[in-house]
Image 1 (cartoon, rainbow, N blue to C red):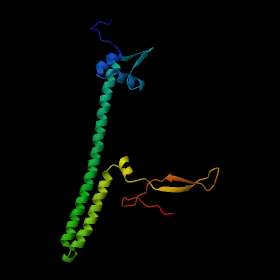
Image 2: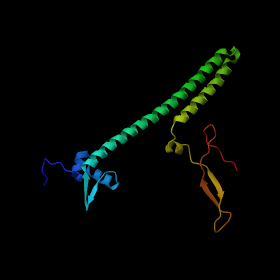
Image 3: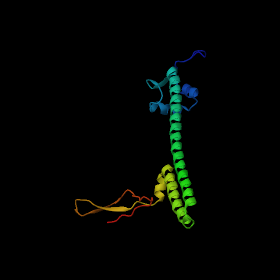
Image 4: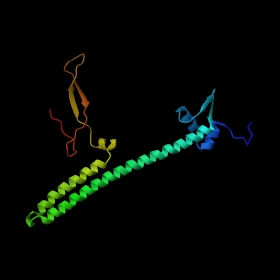
Length: 179
């Protein structure tokens, strides 16, 4: 039996679970994955307290580095999006100037042409920053089937149906296949 005033160099699974405030099952999983510094003494598993303390510090440091990297990545995306907004605002300003300086009988045409350009630019910006999820791709419909000729033992003219990667036109709509 251990003396209550002595600090143990090696901790058991239960002691480590209390120390880290996590379940013993989590400790076992981390040991199996090699994520925790552990000593195996026959069938027993023990944890050197000094190595566990260093592991905790390393985990906190790594987490802070991950947070900083994520902030940097988000900042870069925000800057990119801000650039797109500024570009669209310049286009809108140009449109206003064009309509303002157009002759009275051409104002409607200048406005329509400018709005089409502006809406196209906004749509491109939205597409640029919208992630494409698998569910969204599935909602668009199944990919067209392509007929390919393959050789088999029975016939050199056998035909195999396969799903082709979906091709899109510049407007974002699926392209049709022509034979």
